Length: 399
Image 1 (tube, helix red, strand yellow):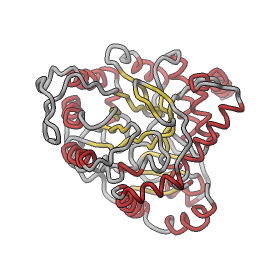
Image 2 (image 1 turned 180 degrees about the vertical axis):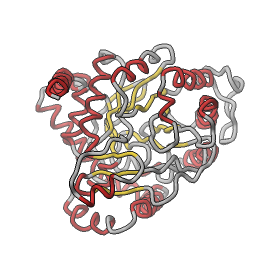
Image 3 (image 1 turned 90 degrees about the vertical axis):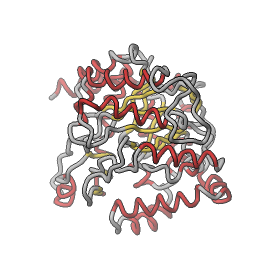
Image 4 (image 1 turned 30 degrees about the vertical axis):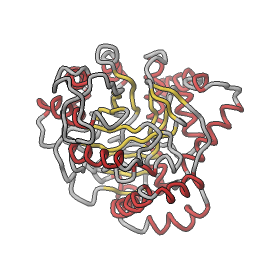
């Protein structure tokens, strides 16, 4: 982490309301993203070396991505590659516009380097997002790295109608991005996590698969530049990933994995935020952890790595995994990679470590590749999965 950010910038930012400073930062980044000179200057400062990875049919300039939640409204699409990220995940996006949960809804647990949030998928809706993405493309400011969309369920939509809700968003956003993430694991929409049940998730994925295959909405091509068109080109295939909760049991995760083949799941994102609270006797931390919402950051690191490792072992490394949760530096990212993740994402780490986090992690990963004698990325992925698994097993037996 840069001395300038840690000693001068972060203390100023952390004196302000979490969500308010987030909104101001995104506004500033959005301004930079719309001016090529500013993005070039940003890239000159924060650009990363190449560490290419190819996963689920997409080519990534490096394996470090921006997690969903940072750029919910696609405000700063063009700036993320300039900040060194190898991919970005926008959203979450729901079919219906919604304000999210009441404020305040974001809280910092600074000593634990954690955040508690109960945002509740606040966004302008899928059609508004499609219009924004079309504007970025028309302005020729679209990133060279893969861009994905995180899809959530609208709060007003009953669980019984969730599949159609996801499908509507998927249909209208399909022409604009490279991959999709089905978010059924956020703790901030009532009953959403019930959709992680195998039968409920199967219904959602079946609906998306139907749209993907062009059997819903017709088979004509989307009109160029018309973000409201719901008519897909059936030849365009977008990888669909599923984001899982760290609080699921391994048996529940195994049931979800049974859908990977039949429903063409391209990968798993492990994990979302946790509803578990770390033990602490610190009154300030206790005050934060009593707030509603999911915990991200350092307290999530170990559990998310365990989930990555379990998924990797269960699928024998055949299903790509994106590791997210408690990644603050190259050592954290390397832990996820060697446990079985092909890619990693950061969110809370960027808030605490600053805008240079992607550059620092990529440089550190390249150094660790060399130190371990790995000549290809696939050699690193899952190389320590057995050690992680055995350590977890030993801890469980000790308990």
